[in-house]
Length: 271
Image (cartoon, rainbow, N blue to C red; front, side, top):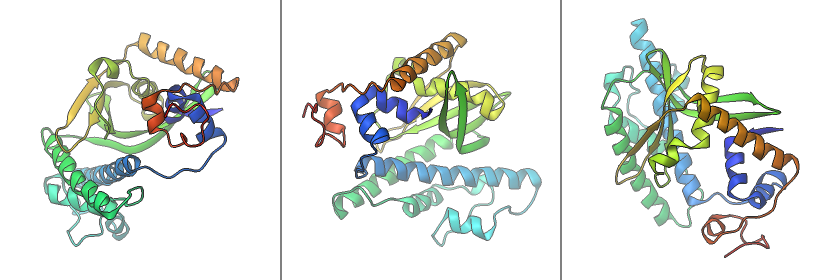
């Protein structure tokens, strides 16, 4: 059985919700929050791709490494595509945002327009963070598959930066920030640390959850010890065994049920 972190997290939230989504594959509509998060991730993926190509252009002393196909993929505006790091501007980032914005999931055009403006402020905060120091980007939205016990864990690194002889993995979030203690124990980041050496060929010495909002950017940076990685493998093993046993017993709660897209068809819903 191959599993992704998102599936593991869904199962930890509520096994019944996992059953509906992954096993029974009951269709559901995308929420406004999911739509907004996807729009932000798509924008920052394009931004990172431009960074990588600009780095290559500078390192090879070529005028440009962008093909016409690249230009079409990365922007739909009349703004010229940057060919070096210095020409990566906040205006260009916002042009990527508008070309990447997903309107699906919003109840009205007014709600979508509000989210679009919210994204402009959020990405302005990201740009200010990005400008603070030089960065060497190794990969964006890079997928991985890691054998673990009797299963395979798959996932995707949002952003990987060079950190001397190691890497710095950055995960973008548009949700409310977790505390530092929660981030220090987060299973997703542990999986990234495990996957780093196998997928990237380099150890990971820094793991960051970058919480993006229109008000402020919150950066939570952590690391993982060998003991923590052993514990993460044990957690995954325990979850895998429950999944193998088809344990889909619901764990309802007012807050989690309110956010669940299947609350209307679930007999255990608390709302």
